[in-house]
Length: 348
Length: 262
Image 1 (cartoon, helix red, strand yellow):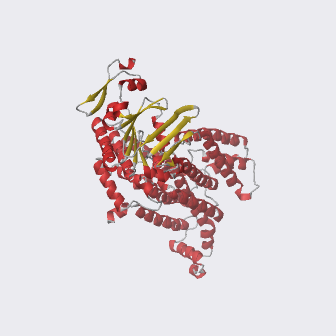
Image 2: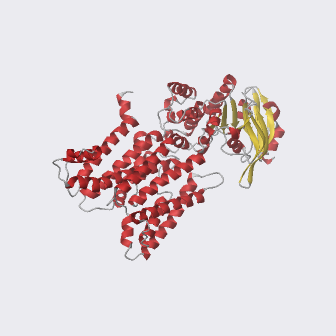
Image 3: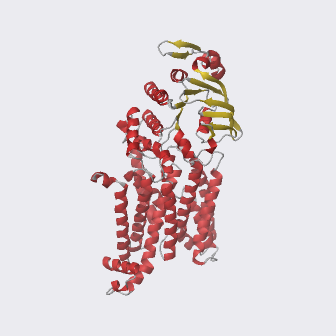
């Protein structure tokens, strides 16, 4: 393989994105109210991983607690959620044959929002700290079932029908959320805060949950990545190339929705990551899902981690992460979309 | 015999598309399927590639029911060039043609050097090598159709189905594409099943015509028997004159301005 080809290859992209992610994790761990030196962070992480406590000799005794109990859970959760949102974005765009689809097109987020709003409004605490995520997840799952039921016909699930059903169901659910906000007196602040998304006070339990679902989702998506490529040629061609479209579409739909639902239930609603990351990565390394999926997962992790660090440690006041991603990602997406329209390289 | 259909029927909901079709297709013949819009030609193709399952009747491939084949096995036997080809993502032409190799590869296998060479050959034959690295979304309709055709050839199957594959092509490209298909029939014994709109192009290339109307096969046989004025009238409700053309070396059909008045 020539040097030039190597730099453009997916392996190289994956390599430098992994390095970037690792660096971001360490650097952002040092940032915040208490500044911790880069090498001290490395020492603390290595000590934790290897179990050799003597590595942290000479480091402020408060630092290991700040890093491992406060910052790392938040940082790793934000990276895992970013990766998960990007993954579900790639998969949704692939199944729905629409480069503008994202985890929210099918109403998954609206369902999660309604579930969480209900939990917060009615003060449901039957499952302790998991009450809100659980209800959010239930809302997302039920919404997905409703959307699939609405869209399914004798000839299977068409992408156009899925998008339309998603929009209809989302509209109803959003009205439900508005109703709850209207009815909830003093809870309304909590609900609005949750809806805007946040990684504040995330725990290791959140990290493991999102990471587990992310790995599962990425595995399933990679397993079907070739089918996803072929499906871009249309359902008849995909069928003639030996793809069981109904089966693959259903499996990937459930996988991507599961990942998106867990992400939303952990962090609230964070827009544009699932839309933007696959879009940018596709222009860099092409639409082949065997390359696109791993690269997007890494890029999504980097992006959301960087955004969360920005709001946590750089900005004078913490802005809800969902607001930040929409404020930055929205206009940026408009720019990309407009450029695409002008260049005329869109599909007819 | 290669493909047998026995009393096959299929409906979309309550609307029947195929009613009681029985057909036998032999190896190494260029078949043409003709019929008016909505007569079930495309549905018949969908049943052959098992995109749709018949409501009644049975389809056999090489003596074995098609339903007993694994999908990937069918993809190694039957390739399709569809009429509508929306490619929604900016794949390069070459990437798309290489997808034709997928049915022959396991999940973890990448196309081998031999596959790459075969694809190069096919790209040269179909005249798409100069835009191999261009994005499919940047190509003209005719260029895209040739890429899709090359993709089907890369699938390297004993049966090739063309579903109005030449409808969007200019006459030069249509003839060149159909000749490539005919070459495969004559040299490699491939079976081609071409759904066509242009009766004269069909007469030029097809050895055997299947005439369909309202979900039924009305006539099936060699061009010399099936391409007649009365058959064309019964299928399309148009008057015509059929004659042996010395330039085309085949039967040809001409119409006049009042042909449609029956």
